[in-house]
Image (cartoon, rainbow, N blue to C red):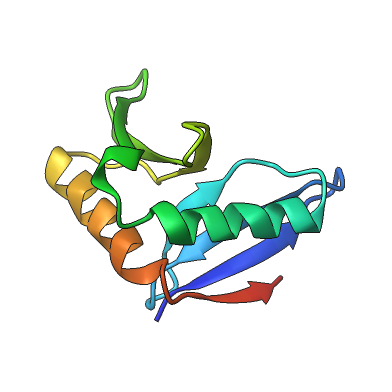
Length: 108
């Protein structure tokens, strides 16, 4: 089972990582000014994870592949890790879809 780990960074901002059952980070959030806004981001990931059109495929300058998950307002709510090929990226999306809806929330 996956989990959202909420962390408060050294500058005071909050962010979360969605981790798969094996502990691997599969999605990292944007930064939020408050914990409540961070929790709203978690809720948005849970709502949007199963919707294919909310994912966008991107390529980094070094050629590695990644994806972003967007909320209903089309703002980016999470960014994946980097992948060497499109097969890995698709597996990453499938992992977000499988883990996010029922993931528990923990604080680091």
